[in-house]
Image (tube, rainbow, N blue to C red; front, side, top):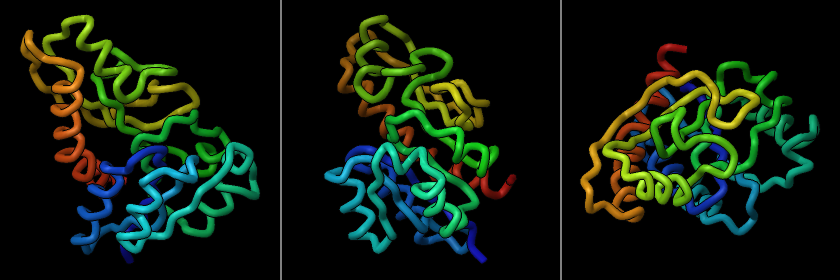
Length: 190
């Protein structure tokens, strides 16, 4: 039986689509569910187009035993992946799926992590501080933003004429290349 992956996302879902397509070719694992806290999020449309079950949920449903947790229990994921999910992840789900929730962050944690540090806010801070490198961090999720154990980091060098937009583009390339591979590694080692 294939390992089952559930993905949480809040936005356009390019990483989610990339992960779904990566595992469509796999005999080892598959994405079985995409969940979003935004009803109009493009990620839900992407999931539907790729024939993956998708669910919109409210904040109350995320923190309720009869909401998202019940849905996850029904789908029995081996791994929960946060791919651009912007809300703090609830303890109620973390307790039910210990060491089975991972996140991707668009910087080299512990730098540029924490509440409010996501997407372009991260890239703009890296640009403003004239960093010479950045990258991605894939880590386990715990009760605090961006503080779970680090699984993998991939780095890229930055030149002095980078903009926040060019930094974002380089980081996205890293995400697309490495996130599905690291998810597969986590599943194989788990």
